[in-house]
Length: 495
View (cartoon, helix red, strand yellow):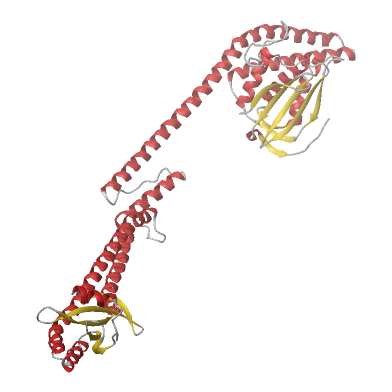
């Protein structure tokens, strides 16, 4: 549907007004002003010529009457001029400027008038605007000559000064009214004609661009209006089509790259873990089976309470080691198993129980500083394995204590595990998470613990970071996103 025109003017219309219509009206106004001035000058000259013709028409009869001292004839000629048109007054003077006869409003004595003197001396008519009896008049002085060409007097004809302006006033009013009407019509044609011919199509293009800027990439413009605007609209549509195709292609490439990165991570994991999985199964599986079998035999042979308790503890740890080996092998085969709900406190308590028998009397202890009460939805076995690996590394590096804390970070949580050991060496900061990289003595570590933790966190869309504490020791930070939380109740506590 065509958008209705509404005030205020568009930017294009304002620019056309400023740069086209206004200069055009200004130029036409100047032209009218100049034309009126020329017309005014011509009208004034015409009025002056009329006075001169009247004066010359009666100057000869007045000349003859003056020579014959016939003042009645002189007066009759003056009265005839006074009754014609808009003559305000007429009078006859002798060569000394003394009045001989008069009709209407005139000056009684011109003996001190420079114009009268110049007319008598030069024999050339003179005129000027003067003030006679308190009124503004236009006076024309004509010499009166006899038939021999001798100047014998002076004729003055007065006309109201306003006559010259009044004769031009009507023409000026019509001219400026016509100019104003022309300007209004021109502006109306510009505003509405421009909108119908160009403006509405420009508005449609602008609205389409705004919709695109707001994210509506499906917007298209119907080519309409002048050929140039049609070409702009077609180019705009082609540009949007190209952008849409490019975005689709880019999204496809991103998805492909994401799948490639996922595959690469899986390959790295399989390369790191799979290379030792078979060795672990071979090297640990048989000894664990022998230990479990002999412990079972001893259980049957030693019935006292202390032996039973110790042997059952041995079998429990063997079974736990067997479970850890199985988890490691399962980890090398699949990313994340089915997610299950478990409280963070319970998960950490289980991990602490798994390493309980690794803590000798007098060695470092695991202490829970502060935990939020939160229900996780995770792959329990794998996340427990990750916590066990981090806690085991902390106990091996700590002097007296490994502290565990958890707090909310945005919509997720952060689990922080600190030890009071020597901290992470500078040489290990960049490669501590790489497979088979370790600073532990020979036989104390394989360099896979933190690698496994990193993969477990990545598969939960979390992050693992290693830093050194300002007060000494190493800090391991496990970040879990909101999707790993099922229920969140913020509570602080310590044990």
